[in-house]
Image 1 (cartoon, rainbow, N blue to C red):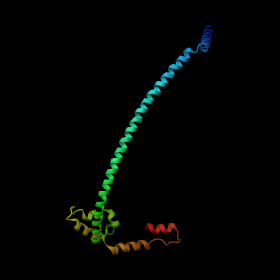
Image 2: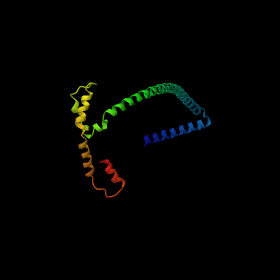
Image 3: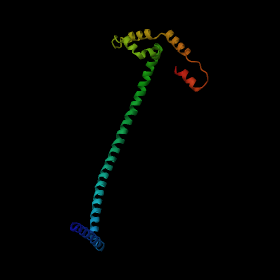
Image 4: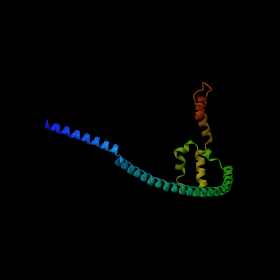
Length: 179
């Protein structure tokens, strides 16, 4: 019982000390105000450090923006110069391609779905790649894949094997177009 009494008395003394402290602070708030003032100073110092870092980053951003726009301008100038040269080259290439198109069949006529299985590559893989062997390779491809009768009959057969269209709607037309 004595032990519990001492604990109770110690607790009461602690409560009294807290009350005295509150009373003292209410009569003299100087210590609490001093602590708050110091905390405010620390917060402001942190703010100044962050503001300084931010201003350094903003100046870096401005420098990067200036460099970006300089580089962009140089690239745009270079591209416009290339386009002028490219237009001249393109017109020359177009003339050459037109001449080739007049002389030879188009590549789309030559390469049908059979070529997607690498049959064309297998057919000409033994021929060395050079300008002098181009005609030989081209002729082999034409001989193997330019079979108009087979191509036309295959297309007609595919078209005829389609199911009958029962309604004139978008879905039916799409099915015809997809085959």
